[in-house]
Amino acid sequence: MIGDTIKQLRKVHNLSQEDFASKIGVSQTTVTSWETGKAEPASSIIVKIANYFNVSTDFILDVNNSKQPFSLGNKIKKLRKIHNLNQSELGKILNVSQQAITAWETNRSIPGADTLLFLADYFNVSADELLGREPHYQTNDLNEMIDIADTFEDDVLLPKDKRVIRGIIKGYLNS
Image (cartoon, rainbow, N blue to C red):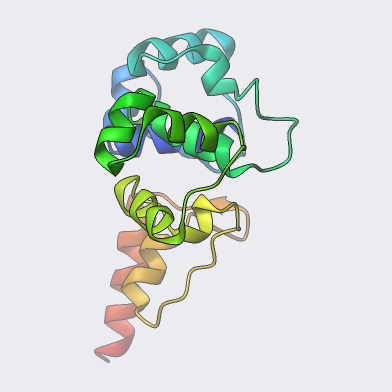
C-alpha cells in the first residue's frame, strides 16, 4: 500500500505528518488520509515524494512487490532501501557478507533468529512486522492506546483529536 511506504519513509526521516506535509505542499490531513489508506496521492505528488526522499516512483508505488505474496527477502530489501543502505553497508552493520544479504533478498536463504531480531531492532520494526504478520498492539496504558489509534469509526484521528480525547478522559477521572 502506498500509504505504508510513505509512512515508513516519513518515520525513518524523523518527520511528523505536519512537517512532511509542509515540505511537499499538502495538508497534514491529506498525509493522514494517505497513510490510513483512505486516499492516494496524485501522480504529481508521488513524483514530489520520490524526489524528496530520493527514491524511485516505482519504490513508492511498490511496483515490483505489490502483486507478489509476502517474502522476507522483499521486506529486508525494502527496509534497506528506505534506510538508504546498499547491501554492502547492511552487511557491515550485521557483520555478514554482501553475498549473505543478496541470498536473503532473493529468498535463497534466511537470516538466523538472532539476526532477525537485530534487523527488527535496527529497522525499528517488530519481529512480527519483519516476518509479515499483521501488527497486533497490546497495551494496558490508555495513553499508548490513544497514540496507537489512527482512526475511530472510520474517522481519521488528528493530533488535536487525541488531545481532546485525553482531556475528556482526564476530566472524567478527576470528577
